[in-house]
Image (cartoon, rainbow, N blue to C red):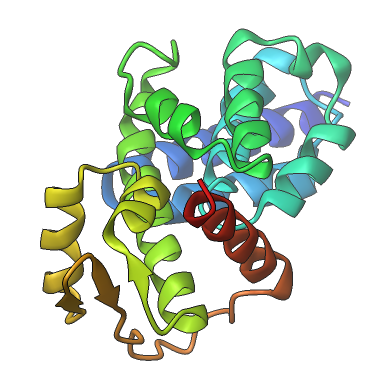
Length: 208
């Protein structure tokens, strides 16, 4: 029994070291470390040990996987759901799911949103990834979009939106942007649910 306990403790330390290393060198890798931890130990270790992994896993899903964010929330222990930072991340999940982008972006931009320093470290990069994903979705689904609608979609000022669009090779015509599709990187193709949500959101903006 003591030998098994020593192996478990040693394995916990390996996970912690891998997480700390990923946070320093490869933030996206931190999500994979957290997923691996849950697969190996989820529900069977002390909550204080598991929480840092759960927090980062849930936050990382904000990038482009709200479905897995919801599934993770449903399967983690109730005690983990009651954690303050977990609830704050979950609030951002629900805001994004409901297309309340303004409040979701504000939460990720606010350095005081999260108590865990690791979440504060990751949130700015995740927000940037979300904005890039939104631009890619627009490029895949729209031949043109108003500057104001795109600015609302990205949570940026019209001037900042124009600068970002031009840097991405988009062209401008009066109050409209003409997107340029991003080069394929061999990644996961945006799913129909994301495209449908984006179209509905932009349509609601244009109808105001």
